[in-house]
Image (cartoon, rainbow, N blue to C red; front, side, top):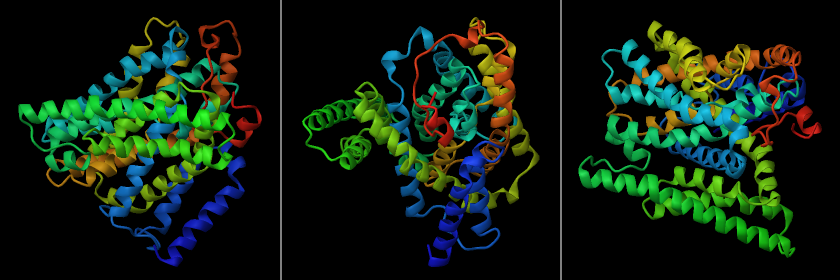
Length: 434
């Protein structure tokens, strides 16, 4: 990046930071601003920032961001406290997520008849995970019942990691190049599939869990003996994510799945380690996330020049019925009222995970049939989500919160344990995150 481009990016960050608190209370979100700013400084307008889409730097940023996002999102959720009281996110993850993938794949096959099954499955998987950061006002607004906020928070914290094995499977069957870029061998024979299952789905998680538990234990013991500096407590905790990724890759496992499993293991540890993870998410993690949205605007959005009606129709379906119907089916029997089901169905933003999944697949996608339609469909869906969910989060949270407050004995108000959100606004931080 030349100095002019670097200056433009830095000044954009500073300018938004000056009004960030006011922006979060309105209809403008940080992902909206950084996507728009990326488009402005990118090749489509000013031409100040034009990195190659398939460059090593873009791939490295995508990989490190996904590793840290998988790790920190998983670490926020203590699996020991996920039980009957958190039945809503468990239903969204266990029933709603697979149904979203199936519905998305089916819709892609109907709208793009020439697209093979596994290319369509790439679309279904890429657009299944949600990103609560795009509707930050929803998960941080205390007027929204805590049970509902936590449902969306837990869902977005775990669904990107749970969807990743499906992405590996779809990529491995859609094209050998895309599979290799995600760390999968290109052979599809019996031996190749056995190695895939062992290395990707079993070995990776085992390495991640071992590093997460062992590393967190060592950090806790050293910190308890006052051997650690506070800054290095934070650094060492996030280094565990890199250790899990690199360790799994070194022994033939999948590093991304290992990072997710390592985060789940860390989430069972004490507050000191978890506080370090949360602190990272509030600063460096947010900067990485917003950098991805800037790249999204700068190098991906210009490709929307080739958009057609099929891509637009899929995006509209993906943000509505392809999310809302699976959510409604998954919540059957919970006694949640219709406005709540619609609220949960609407706030399934597609963002960070979808962008990074696409970037990783594009690195080796030359042999994936229909990859151009896959790319355009994912791009227009994420752009629609950035704009629509960002603009509606604060006002709909206020409206829904006012409606829910009319009956504080309703199922929506049932008490649930608290898990921290990925990104907290300044206002919610002052309220203690609840």
